Image (tube, rainbow, N blue to C red; front, side, top):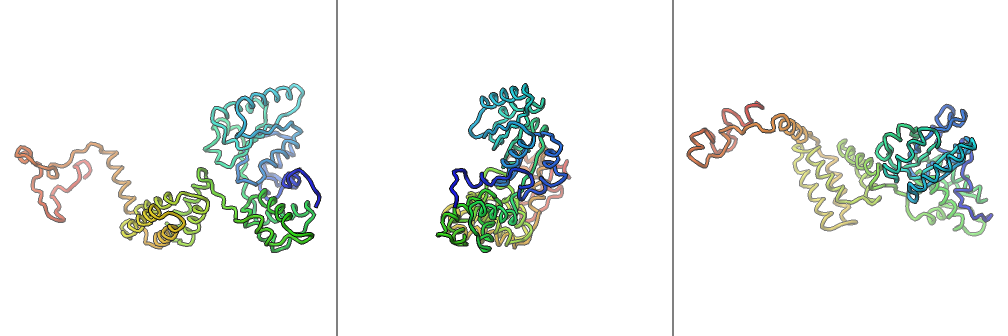
Amino acid sequence: MELNSAPLADRIRPKSLDEVVGQEEQTSKGALLRTAVENDQPTSMIFWGPPGTGKTTLARILADAWDAERIELSAVTSGVVRVREVVEEAKQNQRLQRRTVLFVDEIHRFNKSQQDAFLPHVENGLLTLIGATTENPSFEINNALLSRMQVVVLKQLSDEAIVALSERAARELGVQITKSAKALIPTIAAGDGRLAINTVEVAARLRGGKEHIKPEHIRASAQRSNVRMDKDGEQHYDLISAFIKSMRGSSAEASQYYMQRLLTGGEDPLFIARRMVIFASEDIGPAAPYALTLALAAYQTVERIGLPEAEYALHHAAMVLADSPKSRAVADTKITAKQRVDAYPNAEVPLHLRNAPTKLMKDLGYNKNYKWEADFKPEDGFLPKELV
């Protein structure tokens, strides 16, 4: 195996759009990136997608294709001072009639005022800004800046793309990888191309002599599958949404799958239990009144016992809630009650429903004709007259 100090992922990084694997929707003929290259048209963009989907690679390819000076920053380690320095470099390039492409990794880490520093320079064309983010740009990027940039959505890589990258990595290392080992890599990589390449690189070191890379080498290089779940990001909300919708749709199998992904990804189990307590009233209600008791029991089990043992109670509750009959009666009633309060926030309580602790109040009609007995229905009903 040839020694090289550069990381394998960097050595086999694509140099053109034709070499990019797994993002055909964005790189094929007629797509935005291909058109921007063919027309030599620098365009400010936001690359939005999971880790290992090619954001940095595409930014470098575009900068080279536009014959621009490429400046790379990480929003984690850079601040406004560095941005000002970049602007000065861009002005020097402009005087030399040379373009400047600024690539900002994790651009969502810049606060709104830091993002504002880019705005005039993107608007006047001094900089072509390419930002990379794993977070939804609608929430994390200034509207003014976002309106001047194209959002390019990059999807996690397909199993076929992961296998293709694994084969490319093996060729670069001069090793052979068995068919069964290749089939195992997509599960470990979970759509992350960089992780797939790194897995092959470690597996190549673990193999003995001239032996092919086998499944045991792949398993040894990654002790567990890559369960991706950002507890503060969009995927957190996507997974919990899928969990709730699966229970609502009476799919116990799907609801337990999404719940286990949340748990394996490090989600707070009490958060999951709280969602099930809410679900028991919001989506089941009087159709199966015991559901609320069960959900509360699961919550208490998590509180008092903790993980991993409490996972049994969570799965128990999710299974029963998914299989229970559903009713929106509680939710609909709550909405109607809130609408009535909004419309009549100060409607007077009918006299016959008021307490009458004094003779004067009785003389005024308080508690008149009311009888203390089950299911008694006053002649004038229970609601304020405005609502009748």
